[in-house]
Length: 388
Image (cartoon, rainbow, N blue to C red; front, side, top):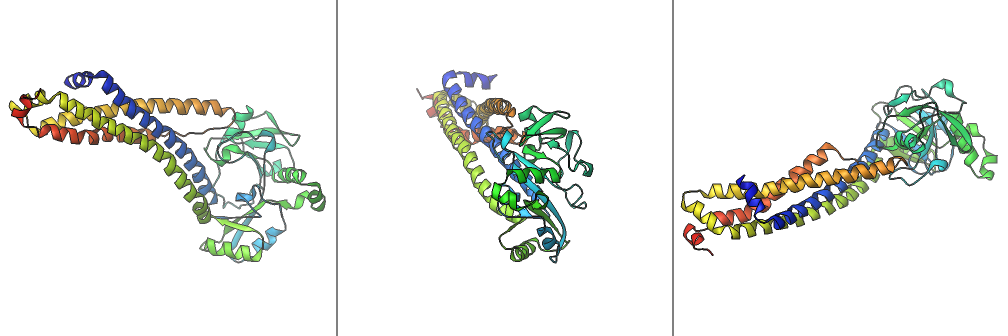
């Protein structure tokens, strides 16, 4: 009760101090949630590229690159150190492309079972089923969660791609990464879609059944992936062989810089809030000099004076932290829900982010209150009693 009375002595000043910390924590929560989303995208990519080499004519995984010939599979499998090669056909889904945060909406096709059990990146199906070898040549699709939300489509519904209707046979569970914006179709069907999307001159010169946009190479156990990637690029001039390490280096470093910037913005706001706590506690000490002098005169130890003032500052930080987390969570939920129908999920607020924000604000308040508290504890009791 004494603590609450002390905080209520100057309601406006305490309220402004709490507001400063609230704004800082709000910024930290929102920007950290955005960083979490970016990390999820990068982590999904790292999981996908782990244990394999993706060979394409440009872009990550062939998206945005030039088509390749399926005959290149034979050249790849003949390279020493290559165990399994899986062809993939991928393209951007133009019809349902919209404003998104992350990878574009994509259509993917790969022969079922061609990986011979080597593929470890298999997002689970939430409803319906996965594609099977019997689906080849048919117009069926498995949708990522964001695609399904964007098109309001579920198992048994129909979506349109390049003027063709596809029956939805499955919807994947949310992953917060690339599979959410992917439409999986049978391999031969994907070849036909990519072939139809080619310029007329190129389309007339190549058969759809000979098309691929990338190859996933699974190396033999014990083979150095980077060395094998170098060998592949030497054997097949004009192509790119991307390993998991190369992906992490090219994408991970850029993302780290981006995350540092957006989290730094929130931390700057918190520093301002910390300075306001120092100001509030210094003013509080000045106003309560006589009170502190009385406590010291009747036997209160310096440790007790420091503890009372530091706890008071910590409570201010905790209150600001709780309010900041509440407002930040509200913004995250509202923005995500507003964009969910279009498949745009910008934020990922995790329990760890909320716990870190609350701990940070509380510690910030405590640290900011130490200097004024120590100054108060060192007051001479006699001089403090005479203070006007």
